[in-house]
Amino acid sequence: MTYLDGLLWTQPSWLEQASSWIDCELHQKDIKRIDSIKQLRVRHWSTVLQIPTSIGNIYFKAVVSELAYEAALSQVLSHRYPQCMPQVLAINGELGWLLMLDGGMMLQDTLKIEDDIKHWQNLLPCYAKLQQDCTKYLNEFLELGVPDRRLAILPVRFQQLLMDTETLGLNQPGGLNLLEYQCLQNQANLLVKLCEELATFGIPETLHHGDLHDGNIFIYDENYLFFDWGDSSIAHPFFSLHSTYDCLKRRFKLAKNSSWFEQLKAFYLEQWAEYETKERLQQAFEQAQQLSPIVAALRWLPVLSTMNAIHRNQYMEAVPNLLREFLSMISV
Image (cartoon, rainbow, N blue to C red):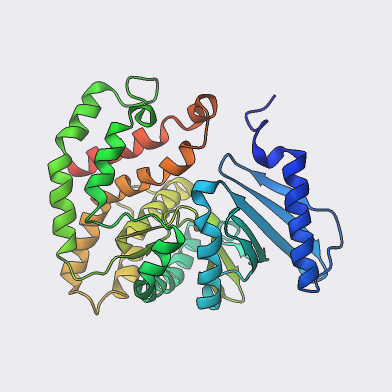
């Protein structure tokens, strides 16, 4: 028995239900399925199916109910920003089901040598412009169920997280020890101060992807398409590069002071020049990086809440490690 056995996505009855819905949607759009459906990926929180059709491969994604907003959000973004989103064909918002066209080649498949990081110099300005336009639709996104992690509410979310000692793995292997837990409690007032200070900059809060790395970006006709919005929230835009930097560090073994990070930051911040001076944008970015591990930790909560204790142990260190990162950031 594997750790994935027993998940909804592996049950024959669920696969039959999903396949029936897929075939119905394809029929309505006069698209013919030409071969059997293949299950490409299974996670606790989602699964992806590949459907060979008369117009090429089409992909189906299902997520747990706690992340069901991803389907509706992806559809809205696809219709509003077709130049930087995979085309969504159909959704079932209640079930969190999403059917979309092939988005092209994944960015991660093109990053072979360190110099390929230059792709990020091209795509981060596109992402920044997307974030800026999304400021007009925050209420709509919140109504879809996108989590609210804006600066005004972030301290409350932090306190709620500290109360969840099970997720923190308090005094468990890989979890927080009592000293770390006490340190986090002692930093509650500092976190409030950091949020208040970051809010004084003239940078609007907006849609934050939450997991912006090279496995969640397609390249199609020289456009960069952003997908996998299940970790998104309404938050400060500068939190988004936390996942990007972390991915690049691991993929290319980059040092923390690598010049690549300064270059990418410059390309990204240049798009925000109308909101603040260059110096203040730099200040806001550095302050956002101190808070970004907290927002990254919060995105794990909906996922972990769907797991039993045995499955949760697979990810026991995820939240504690991010909170340790926060402590290290504010102690510098």
